[in-house]
Length: 251
Length: 128
Image (cartoon, rainbow over all chains, first blue to last red):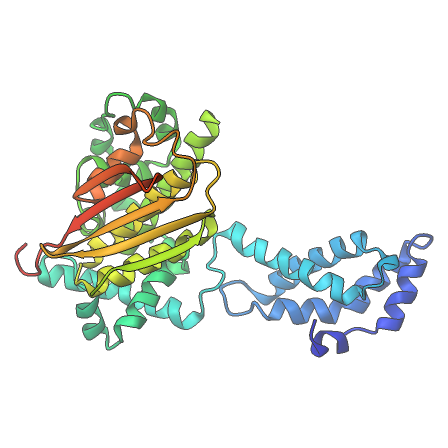
């Protein structure tokens, strides 16, 4: 707990309110009011990662309420010290639940988005997927930056990459129908069938094209009119979903 | 480049470290973006399978350049070898995934520990 967080809270007043808490429900509101600056301060540390600050403050307030309810003044720890990790934990969980990239700084997100376009362009020009060195040269970045940008892309959803455009939605929907008919599972994989059926149509088709038909990610990207990086993320997400589903039904 | 070897705790939340390492090594070995992604997915799958075993404390990944052009990835876990290789493994989605992503995949025991060995050859740029 840093000095900065401590200065945000009137500790003496906070202790007073906790002493009143058992008999006086109003003390809880007063505690929320007292610690609001701490909530705001902690929420703002997560600003600029794609979520409005007001939403983050809301979520952080939930963390504060949990901390108030669980806090035991007898244990001799200052409330603000106790509450800080609970509040941060609540905000982090919010990001996780939304699938947002928690630790991806904005700069890397931007690099990631830029690379996504570079990959598509170069695939068109070269007729194959580019190497990292080729991407670095084209984008005017170091190979390190390209690799970090790739990591950023994989660290979960980055806004516009995951949001299909209207155009994209149409092309995929209209092209995929035929693929589905031909999805034949190998012998012995019948237990997978119910889980595959639960997948969204696009996820199932991409899985099929990559792992059963042997198309490369770039070929799938071209065929479906979505970015290669989007294909990549759908593949890893879908495999994870299936592993969890199969694991759960067997265990 | 000589062999790269990394050891991480046997936990799903640190597998991303191995994914980043394989991407970095493959990039320097001049694999294409598609192939690098294939390797990341393959490492993910191998780790998931190894982590399903009980009693492992650490996951080790060794990446080796092949003289013939390409790399070999050996991932092992210091867990009980009793259920390895998994029964009927060639009829699983995991096997299908390996077949699509790597040129060769083998389930083996390395010094008594369950391991997955993957080989991916590089198609020299310009020949496709």
